[in-house]
Amino acid sequence: MDDPAKELDFQGVYLLTAAGKLHLMTREMSRSNGIGLSPDERTLYVENSDPERALWMAFDVADDGTLSKGRVFQDLTEAFQQGKKGLPDGMAIDADGRIYATGPGGLLIFTPDGTHIATLDTQHETGNCTFGGDGTQLYITAHKYLLRIPLKIKGLGF
Image: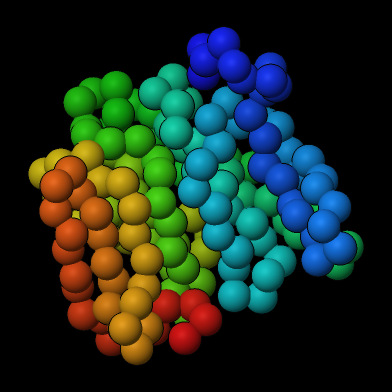
């Protein structure tokens, strides 16, 4: 954030079109990071990796790709400040639209409406997650570990 070579005075989420045009979509977050689309591609989820504002935002996506109605989807700033390890970082979405997100306390799972349904406490700062294999394998990076969890549901896109 304080790098003297930094050319912008803000962080942003950008869209690179098929035609090669770059568009700033939002600059509402101080440290935007992980990103994912709902299965119907009508909601964009973005993680904010800021110790002062450790949260996930959701944005409505219009037919032309523009974003609107930005809202806090989940806020775990207090959990981080109370000592839970990790900040919002990586994200994966399953075929039913559940969000698997790394953040304070490990890997958190949310329903599409933002309800927190589970946490996998990795005991470490947890950085990233993705679906792999045939789509039913969830991979998670936590500190120096690579975890693999078989699931009964497939990740989005499999």
